[in-house]
Image 1 (tube, helix red, strand yellow):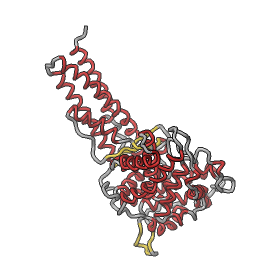
Image 2 (cartoon, rainbow, N blue to C red):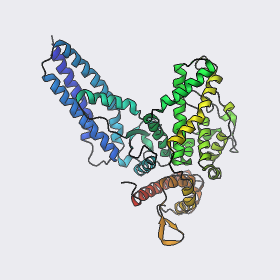
Image 3 (cartoon, rainbow, N blue to C red):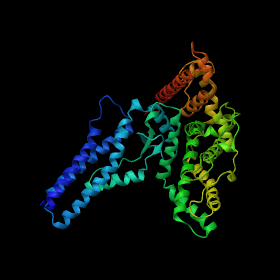
Image 4 (tube, rainbow, N blue to C red):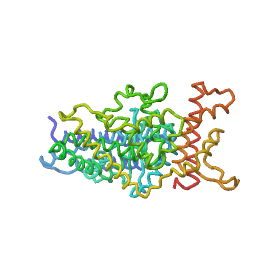
Length: 458
């Protein structure tokens, strides 16, 4: 019969084999693949943590331990394995997202913009691939907890500071327009780092007590999650402007609410006005439009000839009475919604507080929009715009201006580009796909050029 020490040797060897299999993927990653610096930091951390884990197991097994300590060590091995199983989930998605399978210039441009927010000037983001067709923020509170528990147990390094993880659908690795949704996930990072969930839980508890005479934890948790989603939407609009809203409409097919005349049809909005696990899409768009108006984007957005914009207009005109929720908690849903609606303005207040000092780039975009559109119409990368007709004086539009101007061009200017191409037809679907991709490529190249010329990559 195997002794307890024999069992421990087997368990420890099994754990080391597993840990090494994880770290080897980081250490032996393809020499032909290149990664952004935040990903390299993550891989380096995992390799160091793996080495610390192996050293801990060796040291522990070399000790002469009594029965109680042997049992404690066996428990430690089990807990360490659970922690490494959690870490295992993030290695391959991060390794898959090398610079050839990532909109690298966009990520760096968005990160540079994010760093303009007070308190986040040195934050970096690792972008991972996900097989879900959704954008995900990896909850760092859970990842850090697991990673730091391992570190404390084995005497390893702490989880890298100022590092966030975001998952994007692997199929969208080359997309510029769909990846305008990344700022929403950056909002989740801010929400977690500033511990805003507790801030809103307290506000929700007060609202529920005032209406129900008590606070129910299940309802508080649900409404706090709704508040987080709304905050992240508003954060994204504040960070990058209307391109986020257009990407939201496109990804989630919210324009289905329009009839053949591009007018809002309530009968087509089934499922888009009901609060369930998430706030409904039309409520989210309604709040996004409010930030577009506050930040002075809206007068320009509503002039864009697109059914996406008509969708935003329709959402912006809805009232709180247009939204419902099922009876999820055996309490009048109207009371729960009233409590949530009461804190929505406070979400906006918190956004204003966090982003105070962040320059809203509406004016800069408006100044460059027509020139960027003209460049794209003629197949020119819009990274250096002539200023005042002077041949030696150029303007380098910032990523926010490039994203919004290019998305606008994609929606209402693509016909102008296609009509300039010999043999291409505006009513040919394949031509539209081809030249829309070209617009994304030119936009990505423009962001890369501007970041290089302005020192944004430093």
